[in-house]
Length: 280
Image (cartoon, rainbow, N blue to C red; front, top):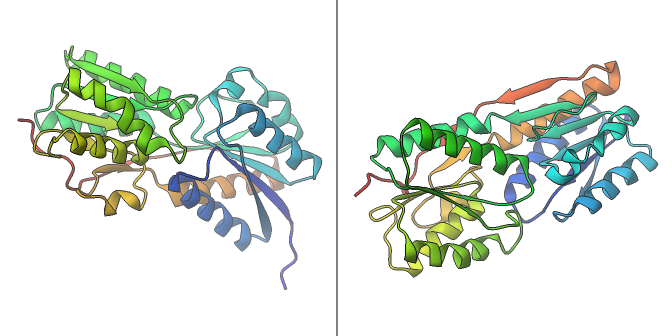
């Protein structure tokens, strides 16, 4: 039997979004193949609980910690800076730089632009972004959205922030908050910051009798399994979920062994399915 070198702790904001499950699969596979065990804690989208999970790992002498989509509030308060001096750390999809930590992320700004360019090429000019709160990922996508509107002279763009974007209630919360917006103003296309919001957007359109994509197009983000099963199948951006986890585990084990940090960026790929079509 192979001797275990140590334990890597992982922290996720939620277990309701299958994006995180796929990332964890990538972490676990690489860690196991390199004789490390994996512990998992869920922060439940709570910044204080996120810090408590990490502190617990440090107290129990984990070899390193991987934080997936860390809470923006924690990063802005610089609470991680001292921790990164104490234990090897890797962040997945975080964009506030902490000295001494590894970073593995998708180029989400480029991915959002790729999705918006795709919609623009289909003739869509009235665009909406649906996002959540307290995550760097959403901030990055919103900045790319506004920049795209400005560069293309599009005045008719709107943003809906539904709050918690990774909970069991995200789909229905998206429906409830999107319904009045769609009744008062009608975008021809909606870009959602994850697939849960994308599913909610499709459901909201159905409740209003809007056909997807004939009346309105919807794009999700992540390429989680449910995107393939909803009707119509959800066009989405592939976030390299398994590879994100695999690269993060590789980076932190390298840091554990050598003290060297890495900064790795992956590219998103458009997965074109049935929820998008030409503007009417």
